[in-house]
Image (cartoon, rainbow, N blue to C red):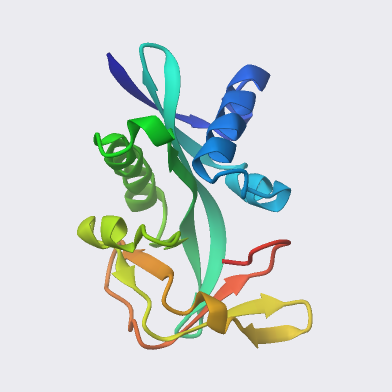
Length: 177
């Protein structure tokens, strides 16, 4: 039996956190840095279990993105993964359905940086490619992040923003997007 549970980071026990980290390490082939892990925590998690075993995960954390001259409360999706031997069976969609519910009910915008090869999955769910420039509000001011152009997606909750404008994320260690 497959179960999808949403839970805040604060309510995950040590064993659950360890299982999530192990899943992410396996799914990203040990290319999931400590800063990536840090970005995954502090918000709502969607956990997919089958017969009690964790097979899927994703989280949504709050960030502030600058868009059209204003700071937009954004649900930023992190750490979406399905156990490699369980992919292609709808578990990623179950994770995203739970996370999109959180985004639509609590934020003005959803955003994520799509891993290589995952863009079609997000587009099919209604996420839209940000076609303008991406930047970060760094400690020294606004800096371009051209390496993130073409991999940043948004999920409008209300009005659709100008997808050709400039999108600026808040600063954080590691990958800023």
